Every structure is written in C-alpha cells, then in structure tokens.
Picture (tube, helix red, strand yellow):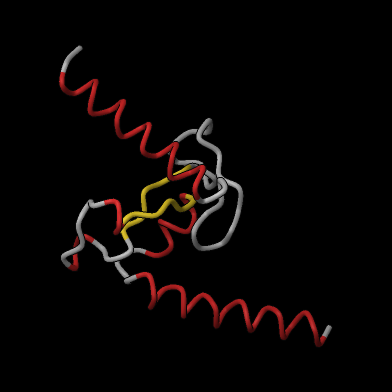
Length: 101
C-alpha cells in the first residue's frame, strides 16, 4: 500500500470517528450530515477549523470539528466564536419574527 493511500484511509477513519462523536450533526446548525453526498452538497461533511488556518490554527484534532458544507462555506475566515455569535443574532431575529407572526 502506498503512503498516500494509508494516509487517506487514516483521515477517513478519523472523520468517521468524529462524525460518530458528534452524533452525525453539524457542529453549528445541528443538521444531520451525509458522507454519501457529493463534496459540494450543502449536507456534505467537511472539516471545520475552530481557529482558521489563516489565523494560525492547526490541523490537530483539538482544532477540528465537522460541519456541513453550507455552514463551513458561510463561516469563511471568521473564528468560530465570532461566527457563532453572529449566527445566534440571526437566529434570535428569526425567532422574534416567528413569535410576532
């Protein structure tokens, strides 16, 4: 077996273990993710860096969570706390609109 193949197998196993630990849910929105869909599908499983690599974050397991493609793409280079805080504000606004309807 070539080194690249064993590394890919290791990463897939790690991703599966993390997915099980997260109950198959996106770390941000809680949607059930699907490893069988195309990588550009909104429900695709993606590795999410809590501290973005662009801000000095690493690929270590402690800095990685799994997120759906939609959330990972929407978050961009914000750190997770900034983005989650912004999203909570949006969710609060949506809840308020629903209550007033």
